[in-house]
Length: 640
Image (cartoon, rainbow, N blue to C red; front, side, top):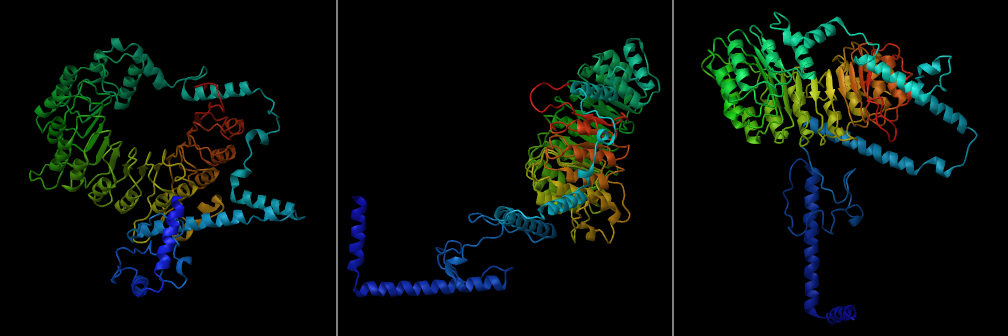
């Protein structure tokens, strides 16, 4: 009833206006206003098309924006008015980026991917198999396509060792094969029944068993002391008496893997003896109560001429206060060049201020040190403190290794300012893992910071905001930017699943393996056969050594690329939870790599079968350690 009354009122109102002069005048005014609005819109669009780099100068109506106005500047009206940029939704706001070389490369890659996606969708809609019947030549076409696929993917031609041999072992007991494989891995790790330990291991074990009778170790190397400490901790014999033997006079490096049983008084007594006698490095894990204000006081009381510390590494020093670490840096800044702090919850802005004050070239005493390594992990620093560290002085200008891991306040601005403060492209290692708030903007900063091409290690694990477009642009040759880094260690694990793909890893492997030459840009084009990568570029050099791509979407295509570019360099590969990698891809990779390849992580790859595990080319060597081979397809516990 309400709807009927409303419609009746509207009809009476419309009929009552017929023949009224005031109504006709109002209609004429509305038409005139519409003409004016059309003219303004036309002028605005014409100026925008003529000079797209400048904002429009014509008058616009505040109540009639371009996106919502019903009047269009084209003669076709609304037909083409609602068109949106390629790859965007109608209600999506298109963000215009700065027209720098890195941004232009990202836009070009994005446009290429959108065009590819639309082309694939059209091909799926226009599939000839769905509309046409069978043809007598379909079999020949399938054979030709299969031949082409095998040519483009050489891993499809890989045959396991069992299939190449004449003996038929397909009927062998499944449990017996798994038990044999398990024993081989135990022998490789030193836990098997038939394993024969080395002479060094026999000596270490004998010393640890009788360590309570040892008064001094003498002039033994630091690596031997470290091995003894690790074995003592494993057997629960690391106590105060063992610490006194390890920290005897004359030691240059004091390294302890666990300080839980060492008191602060005992540690301070050792420092009073070791520092004047030439102690140069303090490397402590699980510091606990042994390193705090009292230990810092002992270090600051030593004469500056006798203090020769060049490296300090502290993990788990929950008693170390912010003012104490600032005093420590001030006392040892003359020789200190490496600082590594992990899980020290009381460190704050005074630490950053001390770095800027004591390592700056503007200090007038002439005894400033040179900071080469800065490693911070799980430290509760504020963003203001980090910005002060990067912008206040040139304390970080000589850094060779930078690690900012698992720090909540690290974002694009912090990384950009810190990297810009490093001069000359001296950085050799960057670790920004565990900071999911970082985006593609840091990739451009890293690329610009690597002007001298010295970057060899890049760890970006857990950066879930990185995109495939940004990573491809990072490893692509771009004018006006330094060349892509020639990495030896690459960690892109636990990023977004679809963003780290075959294209990204292929570009990274190419950049790491090929010498820069005039033909580099030409070889950036896609090559269907990875086996021809090395032969296409003259002067191939050593490639990636350590790769971690846990939980990514890489497939057998990446294994073929690694086999072509890293055959003489790759030593360790972690492809855990990469579900697109098959037996043939891994088997082909292992068959092409040299003897330097000794460790492979395959946790979560339940699709692997005995075709690879018992049929790859290095089963009988007993050198390749495959970690995680005991994952089952469903149910049950792992054997390890």
